[in-house]
Length: 482
Image (cartoon, rainbow, N blue to C red; front, top):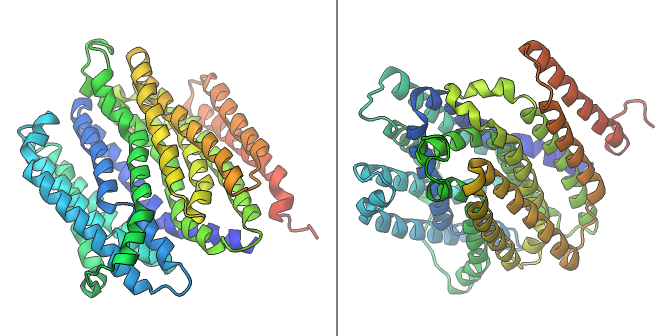
């Protein structure tokens, strides 16, 4: 249990640097949905959906390559850092210049032809993100979660502070949503100062043998990342393309996208937990790969991960009657039905990330590419078939179908090449029970908010107690147990 406790502790610390900042960013939806109409919020949703794609191209999968090559016995970490940073900065600089050169045509395609400056600001944000990606990865490799957390938290505090200042105290209708991009860019500049020592010490380098090997390792991860971003954001993009005219009683597709994007924010709660866990788990998996008991350890990690995610699924989905007030305008509330579906989808995405350890440890990352590209195809087809009939509810089901399918395929392939004794029956039982409780609880409508919230807390506490009673012996939590 010692290794699991350390992993849990690292997850908490990395959570301070990933969950807390992104949770604070999530709370900006309070401000954004109060200031911006759904159609205006749709512009933000649309542009940041494209950002995720470009960010994958900029970093080119080199973060994982850095972990892999810097963790090898006898590796020169400083040399690997210089090589990796050189690749990332070079790629992101070239792509930035290309996008800036075509800013106006891109703005026309995005229906913001009079705001081509949005494109330039977005590229600047992405370039800084890519420049500091490997320095942040270095902090994780060096097991320095406190510094990692400090940098992330201070950045988001600047971001939130600027949003509050711009949108409350200095708001100008003629600038509108541009304030969001200006605040993001300004906050990102802080990173350059935060990593100034590391960036000054960096020396551009290239070594044919090592750099080529890193490219070969990272390229499938980059393609996987692109496919993964397709799975994550394609629904938000295609909603504008495939939603029939007048589907939502005379409301535009931008309006529907704004509703979808705002309600989608609640799924961030699950994705943040997954991201914090990945920050801690990725180096943990590599560090324990040589242990003869690692398969049992990895299965145990996934089991407890599933339980935690089920608690989140149940806690959020049964309290939407209370959480909906985060979305300040009531017109946003009509899309809340997609939240449990998205949370369940992200739960399976987290399981997939855990199970994907097998192809990373045996250097067969192309399997990740194959699985994720397959998921992207499923996402495309599911959205194409479901959006015309079910709107953004169809998009949310497409997300679930995609991640569930990827998890199933990854599991069966992993059992062939790197068998891990996952507790499939028990894990599936927890997921089914949590899902049933979400459905059953939401069928009971209580008008009194205090009574409703109390009832939901009892349901959640009962599930936690149920899990504790099943797991207490293995966790060795009972103080009187010998």
